[in-house]
Image (spheres, rainbow, N blue to C red):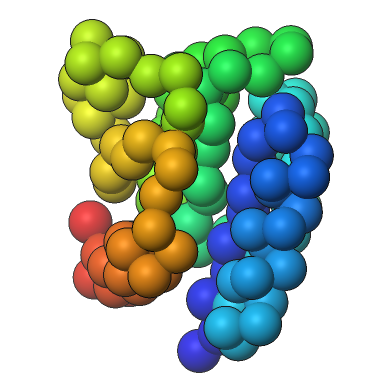
Length: 125
């Protein structure tokens, strides 16, 4: 089964480069750059895992995480941010994030986290 990953980050260059790296690893990956686009893409693209930034122009990642968990609870969400805090990390984990990582992130570490999130999704949380 091919993993499907959606990268959501307001830094378009970062999001598209990360999606391209994931594609080179055999993962079906796409990228969007706002919270509203993320919510639409989750229902259209049907990813296994969402890599989600906290800071976006239209709504913050915590709200996006909350909405994804409410509408698509089987989708695993990895929060990846450069502007996080300990409190935001706790809030994200309480809302059901699979993991909370800080930028810059090691690509191998991120790939391991994505694989773990996909396995958890297959097991049904």
